[in-house]
Structures are given as C-alpha cells and as structure tokens.
Length: 320
Image (cartoon, rainbow, N blue to C red; front, side):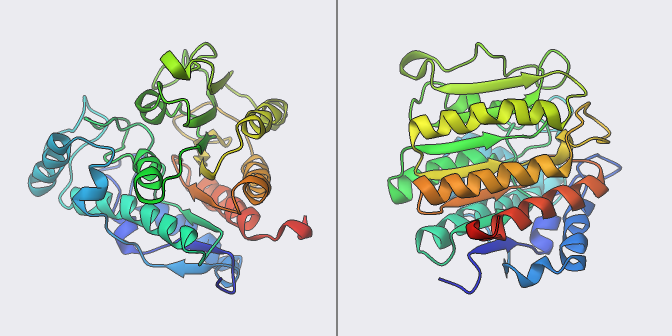
C-alpha cells in the first residue's frame, strides 16, 4: 500500500477531453480543479497518477464495435456531431475519450492490486453515452466500461453505482436496467425539468432486476436540506445489497450556480456523499471506491466540489 490510500489522475491527456467554440464542457475544467487542488495542498495527501489510454478491447467491453469505429472516424475529421447536436466531434476526440476510459480502468487495477484503496479521476463520469451512441457531451461511457471491466477482469458482480450529478445517469441506468447485480442509486433534478428527461421513481429496473434500482428525482432549486433528507435512502439501499466495489459519479452541476441546471446543493453535500461512501466501502468492499468527476460547468464549483470530494476520500475514517 502506498503512503496515501488515495490516488488521483491529472494530465494534459485528460484535459484534452473538452469541446471547442464555447461549448459548456470545455478543456478548462481539468485545470480549474488542478489549480484548486494545488492551492489547498491536497496533492500532498494523495498520489498523482498520469492518464492512461484504454485499448479498444477495453472500450468494447461496453460499447459496440461499430460505434467505437464511428468515434475513430469522426475523430480523424473533427467535423459533425456524434448525436443530435450536443456532442460535436473534434480532432483527437478518440484519443481523449480513450484516456478518460483508460484512467478509470487503470485506477481499478491499482485498487484491485492493493496499491490504493480509493481513486478519483476528475475528467470522467461520462454517464449519458449508450452502448451504441453518444449523448449529452459523453463520447465513451467510462462508468459503464468500469462496471464491465470489474466483472470481466476481476469477477466482481455487485458493483454499486451512485450518481449525484444534476442529470440522470441514463446511459448507465438503461444499459443495466435488467441486471439485478448492478446497484444503481441516483439523486438528480426531476427529469420533467431537465435533460435527459428520465429517472423517475417508478424506474426501478425491469425483468429480473425489477425493484433493484433507486432513482430519487428532486425538484429544481433543491438545496442541502433536500440532499440530506434523501441521502439516508441511498445508504439503506446499499447496506441491503452489500456491494463489492463502489463507483461515485459526483457531477458538480448539482451545486448552486451551474449555468445549465437548477440545483442548489453545496460542496458540503458532495463531501458528505464521498465521506459516507468511503466508510461504506471500508465496511463492505475492503475500501474499494472510485470517484468520477462527472458534469459541472461553473469553474468555481468544479474547483470547490471536486476538491471537497478528494478531501473526504483521502481522509482516514478515524479522523471524522
């Protein structure tokens, strides 16, 4: 085990995942987080790792071969859209998205080898992409790739995916909607008021997985009081299923002041979620937890929200 139990991924290859021409998901998000991390001295509490690219064999654990080839083709030209208008192509897109996915799977390898108990990758959590298409600024769904990789490489079935991004994690939910072993809990802005328009309380899984998923939509302008009222349901759900590995998608577009959502959580909500999941990981998963940055388009919120998550993940349990 390293001197720190927690590693994070930083580097230009991750910063390169960002759209151009004023798109809200631009390449500056990585540096907004990194600047705050360094200013607060958190780099001395974690081990910084360089980004790693995933091979197509790993990406195809979740995505179809045809879609992976399509991304490569669009990446070469840098023109057009991968979807109806949210996810424009840019030159080098395939390589950038491969580093998002590869850093996540590299983190899993390091955790499973016992080098670290926890890891965080800020440019990750691209939860809208489906197996065969892009959506909502997301090219490769590193969350789905992580789930499939844990199963294929390490035989872990009960993976817990927790999402506190303002947007519903539809690319994960519908890809595993019929899988009773994928534990899914998502607190998000009501889909009647925000993209992608999904994640209602009655969406609990289908077939053998009916009743095994937890969607918690909340009203626009919900604040930390709403978060803390909902959060115990997430913990009770996880305890009832005893996960083997915890994934946290901690999008900071649910923090007050985001330009494209209407949520009013504070960074303290994100810190609380990370700390409680860290403790649950220690209890059920031998500490195995991976945080993924997710959405967020206010740079101050990115800086404060993600560093709050890293602080909670890096803090020893007996220091709470």
